[in-house]
Length: 189
Image 1: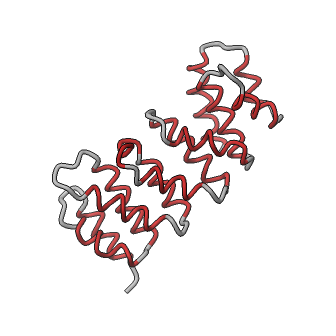
Image 2: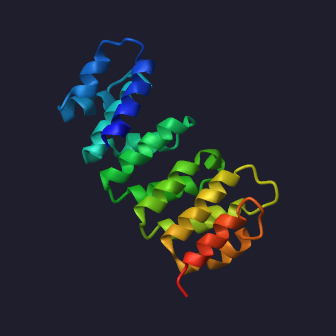
């Protein structure tokens, strides 16, 4: 976790561009101060992200909504940091939110991190959401093949036998075939 926080801190320090508040936010132990950053008007995105990450990794569920918004952000680095914090937050709403994001066709370009989070969570919602997301990606020349690949890998890691039909279909697609065959080999029965 220290390495993740260090990488996030360095990236956000550059975004803060010398803002005097950055160092205090990066080191404070006052959770209420961090919550005030999340809920206060006019706060810059870097400040909200830092506060949400620190609260989420500390297990403070007041960061949940902000982290879900960041999980669906267009910047992959923000999505990745939100996914890490949500995985550690252990909020029971996380899997449902990640499943909704992973299966939203209007936001499929940003579904990679929700898919990976679902795999990590291993929640009851994980396999059905990954199956649905993968089924939608099994079209010729689908531009979101990385999302499809993450679904295939996730389904292999989850080992849910309900994934057999969709993984069998994925094995017929050149970009997905090696991962799909490996995933199929991991399924029980």
